[in-house]
View: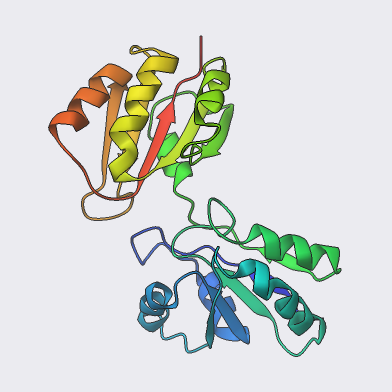
Length: 224
C-alpha cells in the first residue's frame, strides 16, 4: 500500500519548514493542498515539482474514497498539506486520516509549524495544562460553549478572524469577566507579528481603538 504523510507548512515565514518536509514533498507522487494557488508559492520557492490536487472542506467528503483506493493500489505515497500550519488542526485532514487508518493504510505526521504553540508559549500564561478550542461556534451553541468554558481552570486557546475579534473579546468580558488575563497574537512569524497582553478589558480597548488584520490566536487564562 501507499502511505499518507501529514506535512506541516509554514504559518508565515517560508523558512519555517523542515528539511524532512521538503524531502517528503519532493518524493511523494501527489500533494493534496487546501488551496493550490497558495501552496504553489511555497512549492515554487523550494523547487518542488510534485503534482498537486485540491483537497479542502468543500470537497473532502467526496474525494476521500478515491484517495483511499489510490493509496491501496500502492503505486505512490501521498502528502497532505494545508494553507498554513499542521493539517487537521482547524483545517481539513481528519476525515482522510481516519479513512486511511480504517483501511490499514499507514499514516505518518511530520512535526512542524502550528500557530497555537508559539502563541501559548509567548503569552506568559500557564502552559503546563491547556485546552485548545479552535474557532468558537459562529451562532448555534456559541453561548452554551462560553458558559461552559467560563468554569474552565486550564489555559484556553482560540483561533479568531479579524472581523470577529471585537465581538469575541466583548463576549469574553461578559462570560469570563473583564479582569481575566488574555494574550492576543497576530501575524505570527510574519513581518508585522504582534502580541498584546493584559486583561480582557485592556485588550478590548486596545483593539477598539486600533483595528487589525491578519490571522489571530487568543490565549485566555483559566478560572482561578
